[in-house]
Amino acid sequence: MKKGGCPICDFVEFRLHQALERFLDEGINTPHTRAKIEWTNGFCNYHAHRLLTLGDPLSHAILYHDFINNVMKDVPDKHSKTDRSAHKECFFCNIQKSNDDDYTKAFLEFYDNRDFEAQYEENGILCVPHLVAIQHIRFSNKKTVKRIVDTTMEKYKNLNHHLSEIKRKSDYRNTHEKWSEEEKDAWKKAVHIFNSYPGIRP
Image 1 (cartoon, rainbow, N blue to C red):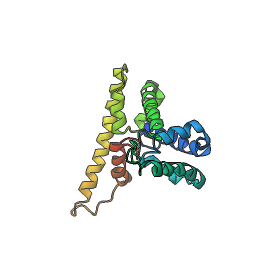
Image 2 (cartoon, rainbow, N blue to C red):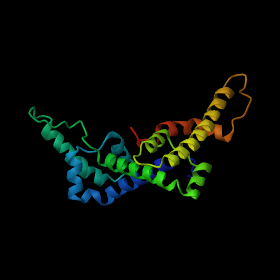
Image 3 (cartoon, one colour):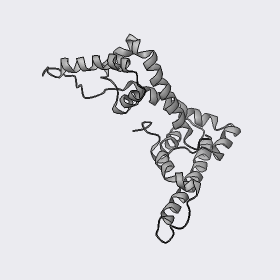
Image 4 (cartoon, rainbow, N blue to C red):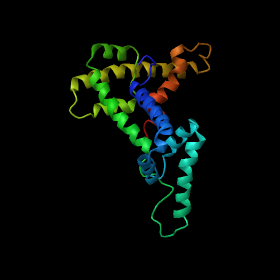
């Protein structure tokens, strides 16, 4: 939470990166995993490109040799019912969804720890999708949820103040006023807070 962003997004992103690296190290040679990925026709657009950023030409050659073989077999066949342009269930989307659910529930559970709550009050800020997700956890402690929502609303109010200041100081009559350090980052932070981190949520 000391990073000042959504701690759930940070954990989900960290675990995704681990899963991508682990797949290239070990999963590529696991027949069950390979078969599962081949059945789902590879990865979604986002995770395919995330995997690409990690390099590893050999692993990509092994995977995409099979994928393209399937395309050459199915696409010319007019009777084939397999849509090779679609991805039924992305392997990494499923991992990410599971981690997202786990860390959202964990945040709510840990919030009853006073030190954890104090850290959030001082540094963290939940993104809108994760705040709403916490509200929809079944059988949750309603008082804890309310404390989280109330604290987060204050943080949103503060962020919105900085956004208002950016608007005000961008007026030609006020361009002589310097932006605060918070204002310099507020517009970027607002995108993350409203939409989550890239690829975390649709």
